[in-house]
Image (cartoon, rainbow, N blue to C red; front, side, top):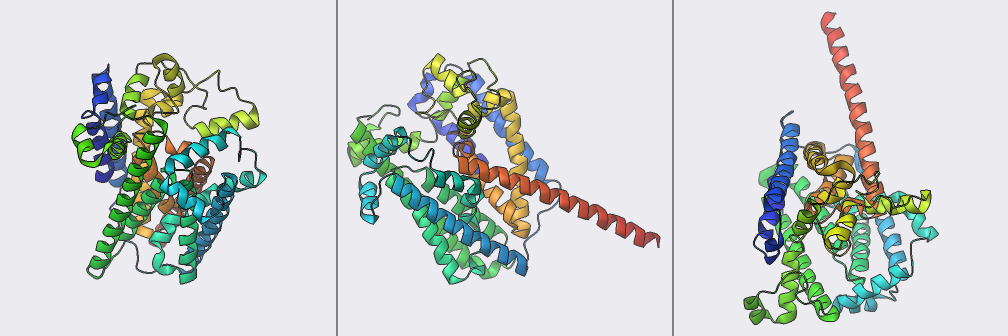
Length: 433
């Protein structure tokens, strides 16, 4: 909880230190809403954790669970490999050299991505459409690979690493940091679970240090690539200083392009609060359940003929009324949720997120069960992207994956409740006898 709150309030506090804060017309309203939504998140977390004390996972796992984990890791590795290779081919990759060329010139890959999107490549591919229902596999590989690393044979570890590498190679090829960030977040989530669920703590102190070093190194590499990528975009597209002003002192030390990249990375998790301030001033209009998750809205439009123009999302209407680009700049997760829930409903929704965040964390640490582990990793992604957008609603595979996990979680909770009721009845009967 403290890590999540530090991120949510830290990014909000950092926003007020940027030049964009001077454009906020309703600072009181913005502060009340953000702080209130964060407080509800904390309240939901605390309410869940106060139900019973956290226990530690046993040192061993059942044979059936280990077998299930290995099957999922293998299936997810194959899924990542097939999906990534298909996407690389559709976006024009010809081999490792072309991927390396995009890493060196990410702006070129980023521009090529939009050219491919305009051509509609991948939207109607039968092969891609067949893979989307298996979206739950897209959220399974990294967390399970980390949490159950010691229970996996060497060949399966290698398969998982290959699948993850191909997944990252696709995002490097198109010059986009989203997929890389997701991997780092899921890696950190898995490390947190693995670290907290170890019973014999004295034996794993050195392993803990390696874990922290690995997470820190992954985060540092991500930040370094983001600076490199955004600097290249600014130079290529001539967008220097378009949103976040470059610090002159930093520019004198590292040069113009690098300073622009650093400014963009600082503005990455902060500029959305300005978009939120604009959205808070726009009247509510219900989007008929199609505003919170853009990917689900597009699916409804393509398959059921839904007309999105009649019920635009909050960010889309704010773009029309205030000029804040809905698809270019961020506005935090809240306007997307408010499209269907209103802003008070979006704040209350964060209380539900806090409740589920704590429940999945507790279940993952106490038992290392698969479903809570994966839900916790996905909620980590949602929380990290709160200053940006509703990240879990931006891609079809993430929507399918999270929906599947929540359905399984509900089924497991109901079955567990029934077992507990039967056990209580049996104890009562034994007592009367």
